[in-house]
Length: 238
Image (cartoon, rainbow, N blue to C red; front, side, top):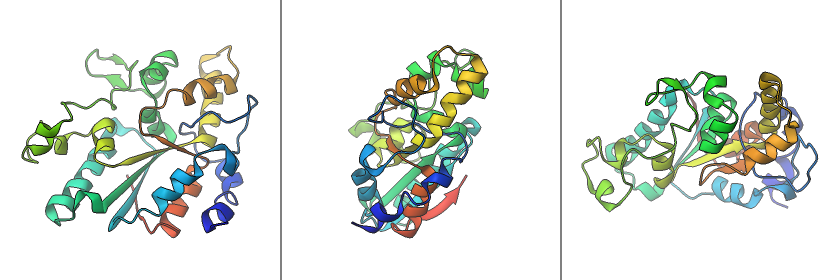
């Protein structure tokens, strides 16, 4: 058994008390489950991320939405490494570890609308000037095609200046989400809106509506530790 399999869940019990965050993929049981075991999530995909052979590997630890400013930080890191230091795009790997309120960027419009995420977290949709009922941070601002990639990196309509989750994902950023925190988050939503659904029903509903490309991890804080210690990812919190 490799080091990740042996150690990743040792700290998971403590991680279950971490800040409210993240999404995940449906566990294999309909009952409430704060702690996932290794057989219940895509551990092999996470191991692949940890072992990525890229020259530069960086993990962004993000908890606050802050108008999506951390997405701009990720974009700037990609551009600085690629254009400023001439590091090939394939030699750059960035993981975005979203938990706390920032984790809501991992959910699609269905979740934002049904659970009134904008109202709950004070996120305003600039197109309506009202609480967001859609994930305003996900969709690319322009077409993500060869033309966009061929443009000058200073061009505002190029992919290199697009801070959307979708654009960053196409540039190789791996967005991560925490299952344990999702369980906690569902309980807060039930209490906040006095919902009739059980927390686990909400968890199952949410986990079926992550945006494309999201990798759900059993514990975000444990995952960040492994990305640093086993994967040698540099760490930054924004």
